Amino acid sequence: MNTTALELIQSTFPDLPCTASLDAVVLTVQPEQLETTLSRLKNDPELQFGLLVDVTAVDYLTYPVAQEARFAVVHTLRNWEKNQVVQVRTPVADPAIGVPTATHLWDSANWGERETFDQYGINFQGHPDLRRILNHWQFEGHPLRKDYPIEQGQVCYETDSLEKEIKARLQAKGVDQTTMQDINTEIMFLNLGPSHPATHGAIRILTALDGETILANVNEIGYLHRGFEKTAENRTYNQIVPLTDRLNYCSSMINNIAFVKAVESWLGVEITDRCKFMRVILTEFYRVQDHLVCLAANLLDMGGLTNYWYLYNQKEASYDFISRLTGARLTSSFTRVGGMYRDFYEGWEADMEQQLRDIEKGVGDSLKLVLKNRIVHDRSQGVCVMSPEKALSFGFTGPCLRASGVPFDLRKDNPYYHYDAFDFTVPVGSRGDVYDRIFIRFEEIAQSISIVRQAMKMIPKGPVNVDNSQVSLPAKSEVYSNIEGLANHFKLVFEGVRTPVGEWYDSFEAANGELGFYFVSDGSGRPYKCKVRPPCFYMMGGFHEMVEGSMIADAIINLGSINIIGGELDR
Image 1 (cartoon, one colour):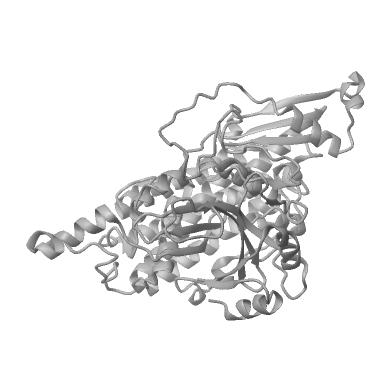
Image 2 (cartoon, rainbow, N blue to C red; image 1 turned 30 degrees about the horizontal axis):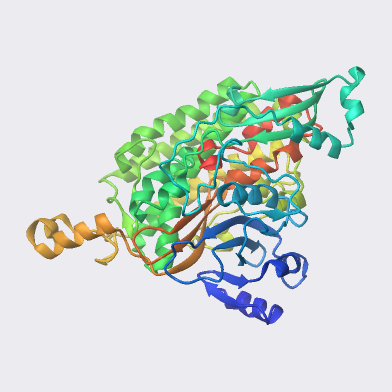
C-alpha cells in the first residue's frame, strides 16, 4: 500500500471514512459530497488525481456483509505522476435519484457513467447524454443487477438512428437547426460501419459531413457485447481465464496474465520467480504481436498493402511457435491462479530468438517503406491531434496517451514482475497525431524485443506453480495415488480458489494501455462482481474529439491508430 497516499487523503478529508485496499485508497462519500470531493481530488495541487480511470457500480442485494445501501457507485482515479490510486465509493439508496455527474470534470465520465446507467440503472444527475451504450436501446432491465433474470431472452429489432445525438453534436459545434435544413450547406449524414471493413463489424460511426469534412460525429458500440462481467459471476476464477482470452484477441495472453495477477494480489500469493519471468516474456512477445496487427491494418487503411504482408506475415508465423509454447494458437488460456498451465518446452529459447529475428526483419522492411515516405507523412502528420490535456481527460492510457506526450507506463511507474530490473525506455510522442501513434508502436516493438531477450538470459530454473494446496492443483501423481490429493483436486476444480471477503482494483500495462480488474469478493471461489477496465473503451469515447474537423479518410486511419479491438471495447 502507498502509505504516503493514504496519509495525504486522510489529512485532506479527515471527516470521511478512508481505508486501504492493495495499492488504492478507498474514500467513502455521500451523494451530496461526491461532486465537491471529486473536484478537489482532481484540482487540488497537493492531490492532482487528473486521470479518471473508470466508473462502475456494485449491487449488494445478495452480498453476505451488510452495506449502507443496496447500490454503490465507484470512481477510480489516478495521479499518474505520483503513482497513486484512489477509489471514491458512494452509497446509492435510490438509483432513480442516483448521484451527480462528473462529466464537467472529466470527459471520460461521459461513457463511464453511461455504462453504469446501462448495466445498473443508476441515474447521474446532469449527464448530457444518459442513454444505453452496450445494450440495445430497446433492452429492458439492467443486466448486472443481482435480481435480473438472466434466463429471460429479449428480442431487440429496431435500429436507432442516433439522429437526436448527431444533431445535438452539430448544435454544440455551432450548427443550428436552420443551417442543417439549408440546401446550400450540403450537410449529409453518413454511416461508417458497422459493415464498413475498416470498422471490423464492431463499431458504427455516424458522421455529419460538409463535403468530405466531418462536422460532427457520434459512435455506437456494443455489437460484440458478450456479457463478460455477468458470465464471470457464475464462474470460478480459473474458469474465467478463457473468457479473458476473448477481450483483446490480438494479445490474448496479456489478458490472461493481467487477470490472474489481480486475483493473486488480493490473495497475497507470491508466484515463483520462474513464473514471473515467463509472464514477462509472454507479455512482451504478445505486445509485439498486438502492435504488428495494429500497424499492418493501419498502414493498409492508408493503402500500404506491402506493409501488411511484411508485418502480418511475421504475426502469422508466430502462431506455430505460440502453439508449441502454450498448446493453442490464438486463445491459449495458459495462465492459472498461482502459476501457469505448464512450463516452456525444451529448446524454446532458440525458437523464440528465431521469431524475434524474423520480426525485426519484417519491421525493418516495413520501416524502409514508410519512414521517409511523403504520402505516409502527409496522411498522418498533424492529423487527428489529441493534446495531452484532452487525452488525460478522456481516459487515454498506453501508446495513445504516450503519443500525446504523457510518459505514463505502469511497467515503469508501478513496476511488477521485476520490470525495474530491465533496461528499456518508454517512447513518448510530441504532437499526439496519427503519425505519433504509429511510430510509438514501431519503437515499442523494439523495446519489447529487448525486454524479451533480457528476460531469456535472466530466467531462473525452478517450479512454475506455487506450492500452496489452497491455490494450485496438486501434481497428478498425488491425485492418482492418495485420497487427499484427489479431494484437493476436486475441491479446487469445482469450488474454485477462495478469495477473502472484500473489494480491490489491480491494473496491468497491456498492449493498448491500462487493463484493470475491479473485484468484489463474498469469500467464495467465484467473484461477486468482476469489472473490466478496458483501454479501448475510453479511447473510443474520445474518437469524436479527434475526427471532427478532419476528412472521412482521416477518420478511418485514426480508428486504426487507436487500435480499437471489439472484444475489449464491448466485453
